[in-house]
Image 1 (cartoon, rainbow, N blue to C red):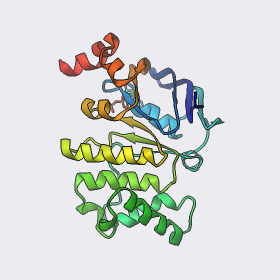
Image 2: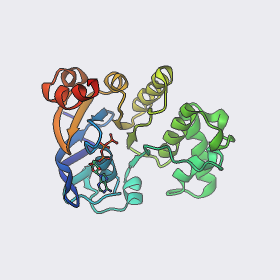
Image 3: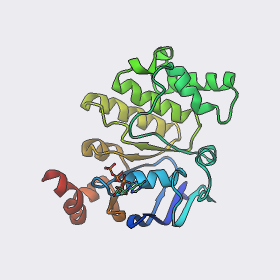
Image 4: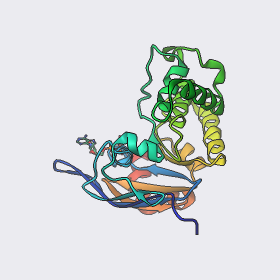
Amino acid sequence: MVAPLLQVSGLGKRFGGLQALSDVSLSVAPGEILGLIGPNGAGKTTLFSTLVGLHRPDSGTIRLDGRDLVGLKPHRIAAAGMVKTFQNVALFLDSTVLDNVLTGGLMRHAIPEASELAERCLERVGIGAIAGKLARDLSFPERARVEVARALCTEPRVLLLDEAMAALNHAEMDAFMDLLRQLREEGLTLVVVEHHMRAIMALCDRLVVLNFGQMIATGTPAEIARDPAVIEAYLGRSAA
Ligand SMILES: Nc1ncnc2c1ncn2[C@@H]1O[C@H](COP(=O)(O)OP(=O)(O)OP(=O)(O)O)[C@@H](O)[C@H]1O
């Protein structure tokens, strides 16, 4: 079996009286697309934020290729190879697409190299033609791709996508999923939080389900779809 690229063990995070994450353990193989699902408030965003150093966990370890990342600042974790995109696409609206994306490259490179890298990242996500467009003029699918390009510009090994498809229609979502599959073919490892069940089921190799901060199931999309605990906690609630 291939050694995991990302290994999370016994992760706990408390906000005051609320146990937002409780003993969460998961691993992600290189080149895998792992989906993270669960009802609102289950702890998905908290887990992502903890993985990239925005929250410090109260317990547990986060290992990327064997190196423990707990306690590192977000920019150090990004430099180690793990970044997340944001739930509410947070771009500099009065800047061009290229300038937005090259900010991702400034951590490791001077402006000329970051700019070249940004152009390559834009090509990689299929939007090289809109490099000069202002971010405020972008459509939702373009925004989603700019956000991915900006993350790619940090040269990650693991990319965490937090509801990147939230504003997309079905056809746009299908095209975006093709992009994610292509990035995986190029060697990227992906962890995806997404509320669209159709998308998550079609895209992911494996799913982890959180509910009230605890992992209640893990398995292939087909296994998760028939797991009674998941149906009660998640599908049942959304069906209701
Ligand atoms: N900074 C914080 N301070 C206090 N409580 C927080 C904080 N961040 C999250 N929480 C709480 O932790 C719990 C988990 O929230 P989180 O946003 O991680 O869930 P989620 O699964 O991402 O939800 P959603 O699907 O609605 O985005 C919620 O009860 C939330 O109110």
